[in-house]
Length: 261
Image (tube, rainbow, N blue to C red; front, side, top):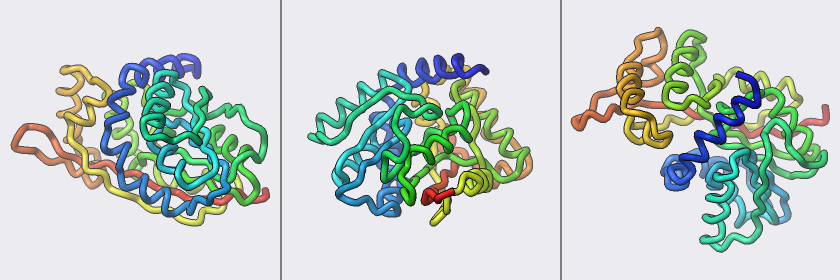
């Protein structure tokens, strides 16, 4: 899919479901958000950029600890929702700006910290995004990244991404933790910490966040039992008494310093 077509699809999908992400427990209170704040050790004088802010949960978590947060997203409706949430919480040091992750409208070396949480699997060009993060970070600045990851097995990863695309047509690809580590290091980032977290999921909540049709939900219910080698070790799909499948996803947290290269 061309970048312009993907951008329109992402804006359509997330614009229509922005309120669902504002109230999503996984996005608002997930373990990775607490870990991201703790591991990056935000400082009072910092300028922070949150890329693909979505409903703004990451930006709002950092705002009390730093001088200013700039939150970007390519979906205007998401920015409206996140700005409304920030206003309700009385957070006055967050500004919101429409921007693509691969084309950040900021000068070189502008930020002490760049964050991005549970978003890069929607990006058209992940390597370009990482290059942009490096460009806008100050030398020695911190990159705090969280995203859903795929199994290391290529076949299992391919099948997981097919499942994700049925649930959300704007999904591009979950990378494996190994792929992320390689990409960061090739861009002269010094990886200081990384960890993998399990996320307990249920089919109704997961599919409902993207307003999946009844037909797609039925398809997902079957696909989540896929026996591609290595996939069930990752998904750990289980029946539930109410018929709402339980399964597992994984997300990784990466903390990296911008090198001088």
